[in-house]
Length: 377
Image 1 (cartoon, one colour):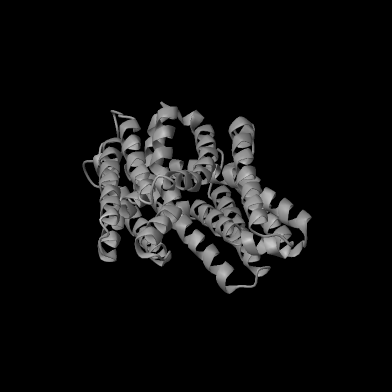
Image 2 (cartoon, one colour; image 1 turned 120 degrees about the vertical axis):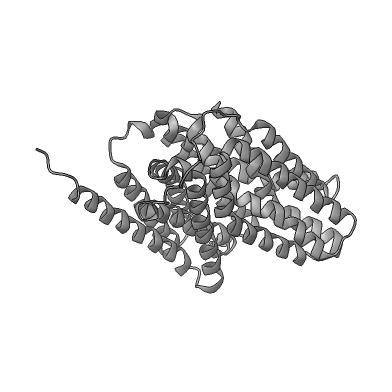
């Protein structure tokens, strides 16, 4: 059942990985300029963030299995409308309207898929399942632009058709589960205060990763390289993340340290990696820093997601994981912004500072938990 869920999840995520290049190619073909593609992507991301929590709340009410199928079909319909409008040379306003539909829905898919995973695997296998999923996601993100480039050889609108088909395939693969939590009655509150430290973890992941990914070209130029070296740096970062996720899936469950301790060690790796990239000039610092951040990424996401799953009420998990999506997206946005407005050496340091603050938050939370434990009789 896990592998069916995983296939459905990857096909649901693939269009988001394809979107930046697909929209740019489509816009260039219809208007002669890439600028409309940038606007379409900005609208898509804004719609993702705005729709994540409401869509997650809807999935909690109607059930993630049934709700995901319906939403994926709606996303496919919107993407098909975008492809049709683009092929018919419709005005930009029509294109913006059509891109809103998959954008709003995609933001909530992440929370719904995470909620469905909890119902798909046994609790003791959840950390390994999440670690494997985190690893596969990296491969999907790499495959997205490659697939767009291949599909575009058949026509500028073909990538949009492929994205439509990806949503439909995902809808067919979503596991149909029975015995989901009852949704009648008053909904419990989201325990945001208890989840604050783990939400800070996913924010730190988004913040530092986006900083390093956006800064790959200027970092490459700092060591005398160009676009080819920038691509190599992305491979190092993504490859290390895949290795870290696989190692954690293999041996993570055997670690005896508590979740907060593991997360703090991984966040310390983030801090050390950011320091190496920023302050250790030349190839050694750059490659070792990127590799260290990548190795810590998959395990840190796994620890945070497992802990969030334990904290969130079953009838609010889709919404809670959607909140996590918004928090991580906010970190991505901040990281991208800092590369544009700060000196190159300082931007990764700010991402490391984010991880350091999160590390402190988890430490305070751990001491409060120990201090509030009832005395043994």
